[in-house]
Length: 490
Image (cartoon, rainbow, N blue to C red):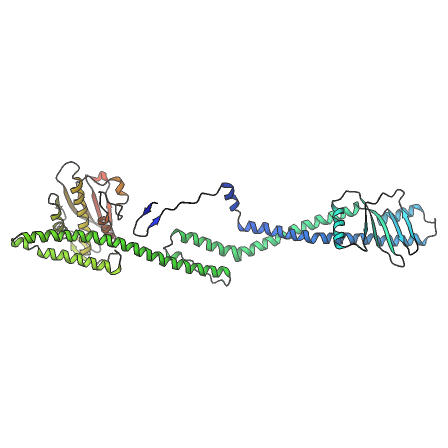
């Protein structure tokens, strides 16, 4: 697996899941509101269907009882008339008003057919209101609604005043039409009620569930973009229900995760600190070793005067080690600003670098009048790292045109900034190294380099409120680094 090492943390590239098919993505995109709306309408309609059947059976029974009551009144009229004295036209009118094809009355001793059409059709179903169960009533109502049109049924019901029952034969068409009209009305009312209730349910769900859940989702997305940013931790709303508990739990988890990520970043920075300490300490001690060798092999009093420089170099190394090990990571201490003569600082840096490469010329082009406000120790480290970087490049690759290798430092002051340039006439910086020029372990332009020197220099310059850049290759031969510092009251 590919790994990336940096000052923050170590991450590994993991295999990504295969994207969902397009059809599956469309299915997943059905929102919760749409699901709730459809589900609410479906459930209400299902309840309406369950309630509809008993209601329709009851409605049918009431209609049939009304017809039986009307038929009983007609039967009383016909029964009170003398035999053969009721005109046929009156009988037909009574049958039409009742909506029946025949009316029969069962008495204790006989069964009398009081009225009948000329050609009564055959009966398709016999329905007895006296003994019908709820299930039989519902099944009979369904047969009326969805059965064959024009059916003829016989309906039997109680008959008061001494009769056992009354039996009528009716055409079911009129009853079927009324039942269908009522069913359509009920369906329309049910749909309207379903939509209204679903809209209320969705509105309630949106206020009390969806909006808080979306807040959680948005926070998770935002927090996932930068888990180390403590400002992205969700702020619990204080709701006294499960979503409020989820927000509180999420805030606690995010806080713990931020702390753990900071600790891991702290440990990663510790590794970088060790590398930085090793880099600067190696350079400092190598310089001290060279000076010690000269002191040990020379009896010249002038040479022995370099002793204080050796002591200063060793003191600088010890101080830097102590300051970095105090906290366990390579964070520079706050600069202690003071006014400095830049030319003298460059001379001191050249004196330290000069013993490492006698064949590289060092040119101090800084005027005595150029002053800067900076931390003397930190700015010296910047110049040392930049000079060593140029000297190492010249030692490794030589110059671009065979000239004598040289490193020069110049400076000038402008109204809003002080510009310091460190230039060499080497081969320049390859394009692959320019993108990460000031990143540790990535910005080295030579084989075996770590890029720590430039990374340390950039960190110190930024702490001074300045900027360090590498000028484009077409600005001149070799490599030219430009340091921009604020004037700070000069």
